[in-house]
Length: 157
Image 1 (cartoon, rainbow, N blue to C red):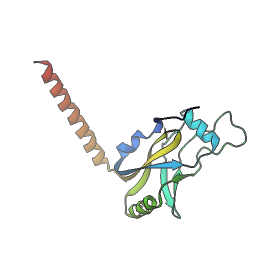
Image 2 (image 1 turned 180 degrees about the vertical axis):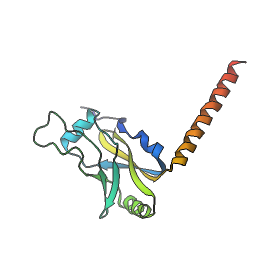
Image 3 (image 1 turned 90 degrees about the horizontal axis):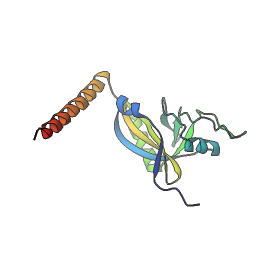
Image 4 (image 1 turned 135 degrees about the vertical axis):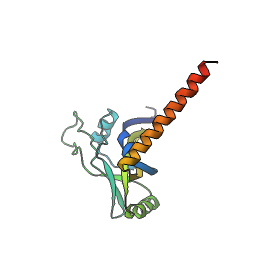
């Protein structure tokens, strides 16, 4: 059977881009059990309330919901267990330094399959204040209005 190619997104955390300012992104592998992979292939996962942490030089993904695979038997793992992330040592070292600064956190942005392997995109992020969120929404609205004005002006010609 030929190997899978390309990228297939399983779950994405759109709210994270609204609530946080993304400073840097990293791609990490995950240590999963067989039924968890099958559940992901079925497109079942939720990143709501998920976060990543670094403990003892290892990166962990916590609070991400991958539901139990219904056709698995005794070897189903708990749906919200801690999952180890596979990152390079220098990436973990750099992230550890950044996380010691105040206001930074690691947030999962998406879970996807890349060439048949489950990956998670995590972001080094800083929380937005309420007024920052309003400012971002206003900028998006202004950009949309400018694009509409440009497109309607082109139709008059």
